[in-house]
Image (tube, rainbow, N blue to C red):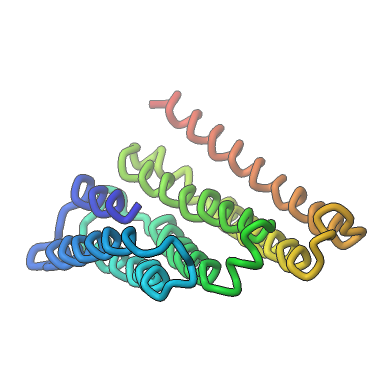
Length: 219
């Protein structure tokens, strides 16, 4: 994903003259790639310090990508979705590294906490990335569809709520393995909350689709 973001910046945006962020990014990416190859030779064990160190290097990339993007001139000037993408990327990396740590992964790897992580990756980061990408290649009128603040904040708050709910379910599953099968009213409440936050996300998706479709038909 880091490589995709770097290539995206190189293809769709113009570098600000005098900026050395390109060279720095590619050097660090090369070093990170070498480190990854080295880590692949280590034991496949999340208790191994080398594996933990390698994964922890992900934490520097949200900041590096943010600097890289800032030093480029993008076709679409709106910043809502680029900021959202970078914030979700930071949360995703931090959440992933923490979840991988010994003592934590051992507890949560078969729970809904990792379901929340998957939702964080897709509804949070990937959705923001795709919309940011669309805004760079669509017309200004079509791109403006995604600038609706109510839909924007509704989507992100629903995503964050879903993550919190699934993390909560995961914690209860860690405490009591039978919670998955017989969690009583607590489990039903958390799952009901998950369903409820899914409704605005579905409606917002339809709203974006309809508005974008209307703009395409006008052009």
